[in-house]
Image 1 (cartoon, rainbow, N blue to C red):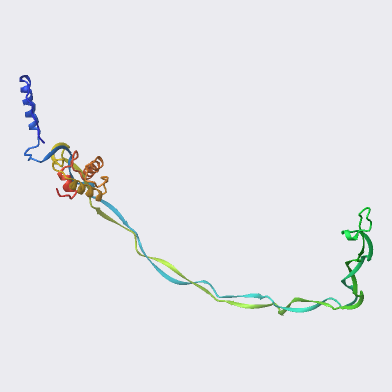
Image 2 (image 1 turned 180 degrees about the vertical axis):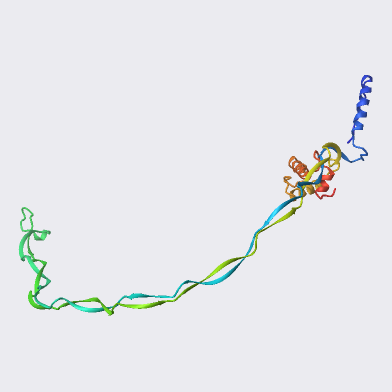
Length: 312
């Protein structure tokens, strides 16, 4: 970066020299040609301090030791042997029998006549001869009127009609209706009811019995002190502004910007298109990365580039 000084009037010369001296005092020290610097916001620095604190002091307490028992199994008779009389119910069986429902009987049965349909040809009108008007000049019989009459023979007319004829007359015959039987099931006694004596054996059970081995007792117990470790963050450096070397148009190439954009995208920060242009979306992604990593914010510092793993 080059600064150009213009001549000042004599009245302002002293003020200009004093301002220039103050500006020179606030510039980054030992800067080399081609380097760019920016005042960035360096976050406060903290150290984690661990402190062991007493939660509960050492104390004594009385502990009651419960009694000790053992479980043993014993076979005990719970019911003596006995007997009882029991009634044995009868045993039945099911048999089938044929039962007459209706006896055989004779009856008269009428067999209806059998008929069939036949077709007959019947004359509707007999054959006849009639006079009919003629159709040709050679048939004329009256030269005066020109009327022609012809003698025409009309054949007889017939039609087919249907009629029913009896082929077998109605008849009455004797018919025997056989007797009707039904199969019924019948329950019969096979073995009658009886009373018998039944022996009931004695009953035993295995029971668990608790036996005292050692009675309850009291002991004095020393409880050790309890401590806890507290984690505390202590500020060792306040937040401040400081000059840091940055990338600018003087020392930045589009290839370097593409490398930075690619590194941001790999770490989950969206720089926009990897096009080698330091746009607003790329600068926003750089700031998000700096805040997340606790790096100085306010410019693309060389420490940020190094943290991204990009070589300048």
